Image 1 (cartoon, helix red, strand yellow):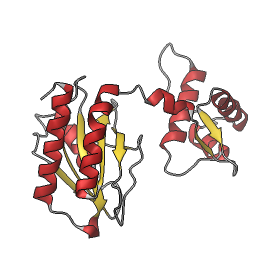
Image 2 (cartoon, helix red, strand yellow):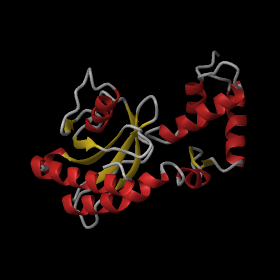
Image 3 (tube, helix red, strand yellow):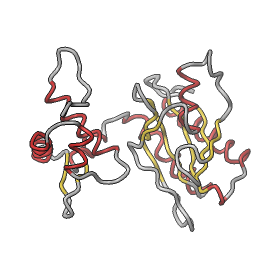
Length: 224
């Protein structure tokens, strides 16, 4: 069975497979079984068991009672240090934004390939909320947050807009609004909200709130 794992010239194939397995487990919309992971990796099941066992031993993966695989608690300690300054500056604004608009607020960054949700906050005391899982990924040409990032990467081809709007592009029944966010490491990023389309939103007011929050985050980061 041929392997579909990405490899790097001069690198370790075993390490590449392990990292690929970890990414598949963490990014899957539904928990994966060993059999499903084996199929996606394109390797023999015995090799998958060895990879999973090693990742379990180091706390990066955990096997649930039903046999499915999930990200282990060790990953939480690692992710705390990712974009630490950005997370510290953004979290209070995300809380304020989510509770003001009663919508899920989140930060999306670029990992070199796709738009990735870094930090998310759901509103308190809202009748309906939409979960946006940190680590969620989608192409930069889909969804409002992705297109904001695309315009930062390729401004000549996609001139930056004041905001981007999308509906049913990444998830059916959901609408997102996003504005640019300047980070202290020059990494393309966007500040966004997500809500159930039928719930409606006053787009001008929501965009104004997003822009004000982005400005406050940038002032804390020193990028305003």
